[in-house]
Amino acid sequence: MSTAVAVADDANELSCVVIPTPGQQLLLPNVCIAEIMPWRRIKPLQGAPSWCMGLVGWRGRTVPVLNYGSFNDAREAAPTTARCLVVMNRSRNPSGPAFYAFAAVGLPRMLQLLDDDVETADAKLGIADIMHVQVGTELATIPSLEFVEERLAELAQSLRKK
Image (cartoon, rainbow, N blue to C red; front, side):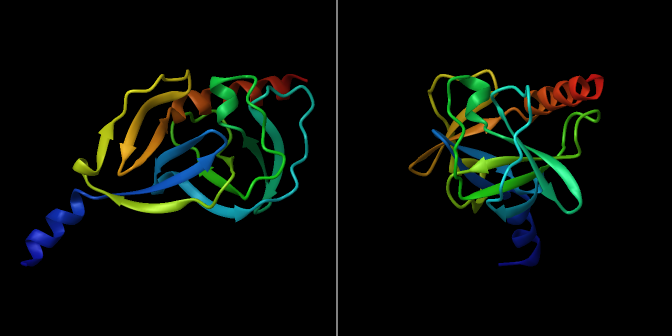
């Protein structure tokens, strides 16, 4: 195989991470993730919406921890003990927190995906979902980070007013 062909193959691959959250798996590009860390005690945030589990300290910052399932279903119970926290880089909304975390109930795993590795899946979309996809034998959700980060910016703004 020539070097030019190998480089072309790499350009078609996307490094992704599958994050197991309560009730679904999220599929995100690897570049969105700042760090995966062990579960830590979360400080509850008074008056926060159901999707915000509270705050956690990370690298000298205070980071909001989110239960993704609560965006789509307010009755979705936040996990009381998750496996780890996936710290996300802000990617869409410049006025929100620079970092936030998703609670994961299992260990996230990396995947190298090609175009034909992913098929659109027919499943009901929630308000925070972009699409559902079939990756091999697994169903995954591509979340709307724009929606998530808009809600975080609104929460941050309401907290500043108090």
